[in-house]
Length: 308
Ligand code: CP
Image (tube, rainbow, N blue to C red):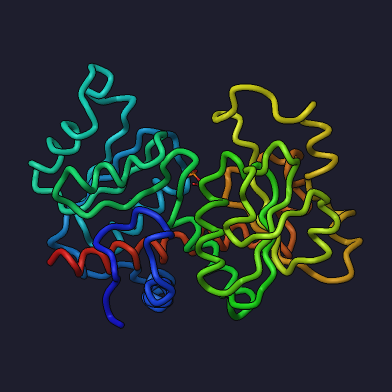
């Protein structure tokens, strides 16, 4: 297969296993490119991309911009906080105004679940979801699986536990879809209050004891508490959360095997992960960030080749 089955990247749930294979093969090539002395290819000189962010971001925003520039696309950046959205302009009007400047593709982060899907039905451009509320963050899940494949040689058959605030996490949902599609064995672990009621229906196991989850897994993906999406408290204190669901060096070294530690960022050091774990050889957190550029180059390149 040489092209994606989709015209937009709205969520992992719309992809096939073959789509993921194609994205990874393409990202392998781009990873080699961005490690050369000349890190740029002229592939998308005729494409213009708008990055529109209605929520804060460091990794996703910068790596999309870098991926676009490495592909030689023209790039414009839009932050809602400094735009006419503050004067009442709607999402569709905002995007249609941007598109009238001859923009081909929109990368959007938005606090509302489904915002990318809504946009794809109302505007004429390829849409990439860079995170929509607590719904999906597809490029994060792709770079996470790509990083597991790189460290462990594959994803199929690997035991992956996602730890922490599953309830409010778009990273968790996209990772569950991506890992299951590739044949991984997936568990979620956290306090009951932060696990969605019917999470087992997605084909994942549930574990509330962190030690047991770590003893079981090959990979632990540690998530941040999403305080910005919480209306009230889901656990007594941060200290107690950290004691029960935070990973530290003592816990890691007490396991009878070496597991891989991941985190999508931003990290809250000392809450879900201590510095000695985040910065250890078992951590692939910065590999995930590096792979984000290659994965986003692959996604942009494959979607752009469908609109040419
Ligand atoms: N992982 C992630 O989405 O990080 P940012 O919010 O910094 O983009």
